[in-house]
Length: 255
Image (cartoon, rainbow, N blue to C red; front, side, top):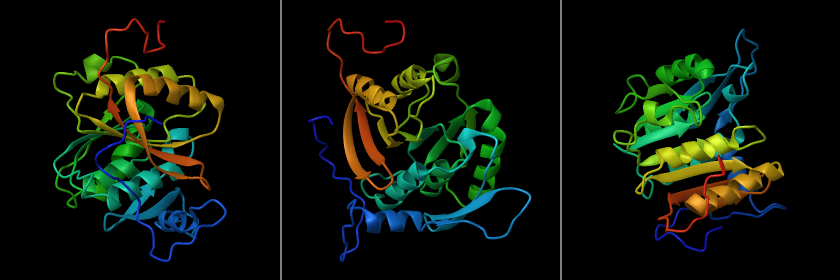
């Protein structure tokens, strides 16, 4: 990761009697996954329940869409936000989540006091809106908003840089073997201002993900907050680099 370290120290809490297993993360992974409850009754729709920010969060999934199920990376990110409220205080902050899927991360950020814009592809917005409304109505300081975002498409039109000033960009499991990694990088670049912090949970799978990280590091200072070998998930924090006047082509699109 980047050699430049942050002055702020983020960490995930561990029990005082923490015991490292084969992967060194058994206790904390058990704590994170313990926030998840799967119903035993068979119903006409698929739902799961989570416990974050002092609330029981009920998520309805859309099983016909890859982006409409809750992946473990989202739980890791939610746990981080909940347990780092002093260093990562979301109260009254402007937050955008990209690739929100079912909306769990956006819901937790809203319950923690943020102004949230939850984004994803148009076809999953109905389920996303439903989950946000049922879990945040009359429970949060600011009502979250849902907005379509197709990575790399009409970014300035839909999210003008003059008015889309975000304190935090949240992302969970948006990097995997899909054909839109370049467009995703463009989207991070467009939404991230000099004072924006990116908090990103990623599950490493294939070499293409390593390529994305290498390209990402040309634009952003990247810091590993924590990793979870048993889940193959890494939690990152990133800030924009101040570019020099080199001729290096940072973004691969069009190079």
